[in-house]
Image (cartoon, rainbow, N blue to C red):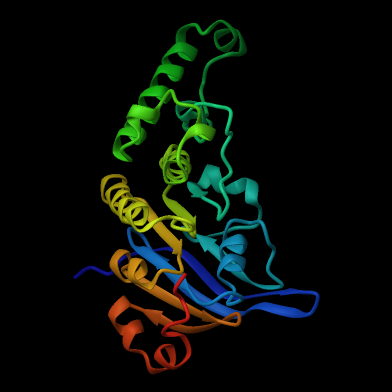
Length: 257
């Protein structure tokens, strides 16, 4: 079996807030094409790690590499093919589903200012292509019927799916999902799991997932990292992590919502 190539590499990353260490010399890698989950109880450093990867936090030490290139600024991410979702919905509630998803496009058209102003030539083609690709994502996530609905009027579970659609719109190579199931009912979680799997398999997107629901993590993931008060406690396939004595002793029963 051919070894996968590393897409994301975290090397000896540390982060502190007012002297309190949120991440303590954490090292791991995420291979191209896998679903990697980062788990741990509140205060373990999960969100801090995602914020370091996405450039919102600058580590006190260590490096973050994507495709061998060191990441330094949040504004570099979209150009390199990295997108993310947030714990709390960050949608434009007064806009339609389609408009929200189109805003997620990493749109780099070649049309001139004149063409864009009057929607001529290349501008019209680029706009049409952008809309077609947004519609493909909506269909993939089962929300095409809501494309013209105002986002703020949709049920919470559908809004979470719109946020996922917007993050997938630019076809990222790496997608960071920060608690995509938070606040969902059992049925909504089941649907979201199915759509995450379909998006992963259809688009080939590498995923890094933070999630509290262990059943979800074990079902979705190829690779699980466990953090404990900022330190890496375990790192490996789901079955191996599930059987790890340190994980059993410290965390079983601690991840439930």
